[in-house]
Image (cartoon, rainbow, N blue to C red):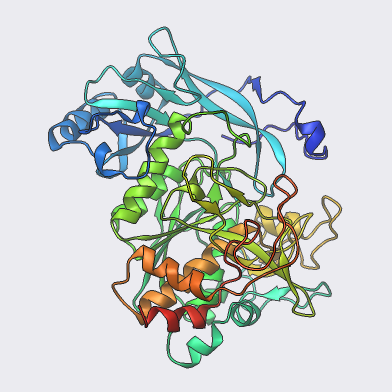
Amino acid sequence: MSSNETDPTAQGETELAFLPSELESDDKPPDIVIGYVSVRSQGERSLLDAEDLSGAEPFYGSEDDHAEAARAVEGSGLTVLGESRLGKAVAGPPEAFEDLTGGTIVARERLVRTRIGRASYVTHLDIVGDGQPDDLGVGVAASEASAIEAVVLERPRAPLGIFPAPIPPSVARFHLRVLDDVATLLGAQAAHQNGDVGEGVGVAMVDSGHYRHPYFAAHRYSLGPTVALVPGTNPGRDPHGHGTGESANVFAIAPGATLRAYRASNSNGDLVAAVAGFVRAKSDNPDVLTNSWGGDGPFPPPPGPPPAADRALALEIADAVEQGIVVVFSGGNGQFAIEPQVPGVISAGGVNATAGLDLRASDYASAYESPWFPGVRVPTVCGLVGMVPRASYIMMPVPPGCPIDVQRSAAGSGDPPDGTAPDDGWALFSGTSAAAPQVAGACALILGARNGLSPAQVRQALTDTAVDVTVGRCHQRFNLPAGPGPDLATGFGLVNASAAVARARQL
């Protein structure tokens, strides 16, 4: 699934409102489709009828139903990529999904905000047919197998030979260095000096993959083996560069943690298996699970509960929190998405530090009050994020010649080139994609200093000690101001990692 070449991103918010939200597509479904199978709930309500998504337990499937669902999945020719108490991430040819559902897979172009917070038409897959209910939404279908409540096709998520030098190039533009500057501004250096580096803490990252850049070897960071979710893809490659760059933010805050990457991208670098990656990563029981991706929907959304496709993911996320995993999601770069709204998730927003060290809300980052979960606000706390138009802010290592390396070396959207070469393995970028692994690194410091804390206690340590940010506004789609005390634009404020570690020791 790839972005349509038609890109209306040069238009403003007002003009976008008049563009059709969905167009017919001439594209054919890919040879391999990634999806999710929801096993029949033991509770009184099925996933398709659920309105209360505050807890995952009512939607667990029984052992018999899981076994029956597995037989139906395998009998249709699908492969299980990962599974949980709620369902199974699966992959296979379109014909296998059609056999399981009795429907037909078609492609549609939907207008959504993509990697850099701009709107584009992106190919989504749907299952249609006479036997399919009309009210399930795009990409959701019923199954003829009695143990299966729903089949959900993955929606595209936006992240968001030459060895490069382990040291970043010197460029004229103001920027932050991913190690020293990020660690200093997020208050991590005092913790490092005291020996709190996140030693023994496992951090999982679902993203485009991970390239073994010499930067990581030079700093002796601990990297576990990458897991590739899309069948046939190489776990040693990161075809886009997003996952490689953002992973450096984890180590800037928690240099002693062990990071394991879950490649959810296809050969083009598109995140076509994000849900599968999340389910698989969760099953490996990490201490922290960080995600720099998300969908996009209308804001405010239509009345009622979230779309059915989002409910499945929301429950998988809730289940991870209930297992004691600290889950971090990017708040979005102008997007409105279900992922950061799930209760218990630590959602990462954006604060910008100027050359004079003045703090302000980033106008690149999303911020809003959840219409689906009472009392939930996005973001919870903030990391360091650049400003519009492209948030070119933090120098990060990437695979040489990858799309990020090439794109950032050139001017775009009114933003000048970042000063790097298109094939040197370094690029200036950020977004809340950078904020999430920064916050995840702070969570790893906390758990390294005080093992056994619950996700709620880790969250409390962060929110009790965050630095208040009182000026600036968030992304223009939401246009909320920062002010004294907790606010919608920046949540509780900018993470102070060392203070959070000290607070955690008191809990």
